[in-house]
Image (tube, rainbow over all chains, first blue to last red; front, side, top):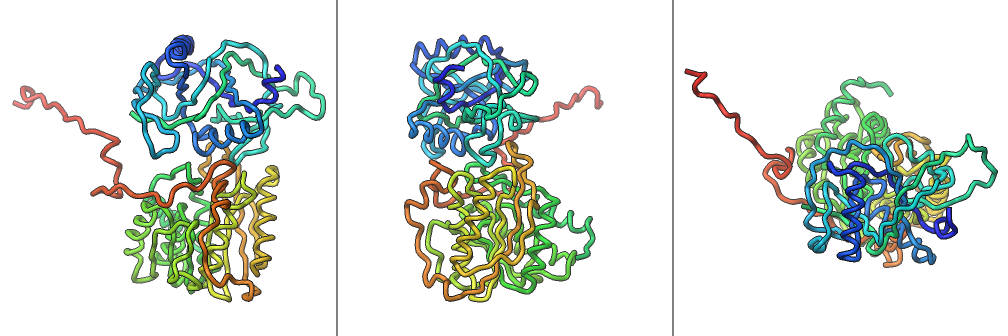
Length: 190
Length: 281
């Protein structure tokens, strides 16, 4: 991992087939949207990265300390067959709703992270060196947190104090990286 | 403590059926049903024949304690229950359910946000309070303290308070909030009378193992009671739901529907059965 990554707040997410669209097609579509609009709305669901209670407070705290927030994504096989309902409006506070910007399309998601350029970058990440950075599980190690139904979260990089053997590591392959930018994450509705 | 478990779970099931869906933005995270039985029975025992105020109660512990008594599952419980909550859906659901319990226990509910001064009619009016506030994971327990202070203001000189907050020895923040809450309680004239550790589980998808304790406080020094109730200072609202997650909304308002106990009509549509008339002849 690079120095920049180690100082960043990291939002880890497993990604794959979503709303009946392959991850490869999603990436191509999102990169096109970035070229056209300068932003990406990356759709997702689940309360572990709720826009208001998790992502926004975490991102603001990181930026206040002079660091950026990156989303790092692990590609995986997925059977996410939700109907590809297209969101028409978004809100960064739950009160004021605005039309989704022209040129951006988010399908089958309740929330979206607002991203800069999406880069294909491949490197290994030891989940045991992550620590939950916000919410009720704050302080829990990443490899213990990302178990069962939890597939995403907001983390700080905290290298192990004691050297670990290869067997003790919980290494996962990252395939996609992007900077998360203000307003960081938003609610969506059709 | 002896009661029919089946009757108790069925009574709590009635309350669960009555609850509106939780809103995660406001830390409305519901307790699991078996633990509701335990907490409701405990509340009924501690507050037997007392007037109790619940400052916030998305879980439905107030109604659960009342319903256990009204259904004769237990033969003890509060004399009256008053709920103060900022979610109109919860207030209305408690009023609807509470009406059915009225012959055996008085249940009332009012809209109230802890950021605001306690209305005079509730100041010093009750024998005990119960809170299960936002747990203060990233705000040094500020939200817990705010709810505790309102509970203290709503109760008489000789009174008890039950505080339900996170308790997981593997998560340092939970122990720090527990310590800070007890410190503030001492300043407010209370002592810890009883602590039931790691007692309840919640429907919390990212922390399914996180538990809460039930801490019973007893006021021993009425001289430290607040003489008036004031609005919270703006600085105390900034990190109310966690760091950089302020208290921004006064009330959650309920959208009026003719079927408050049924699925929202916006969430489904009906499709007619096409009858083959030829086969019927």
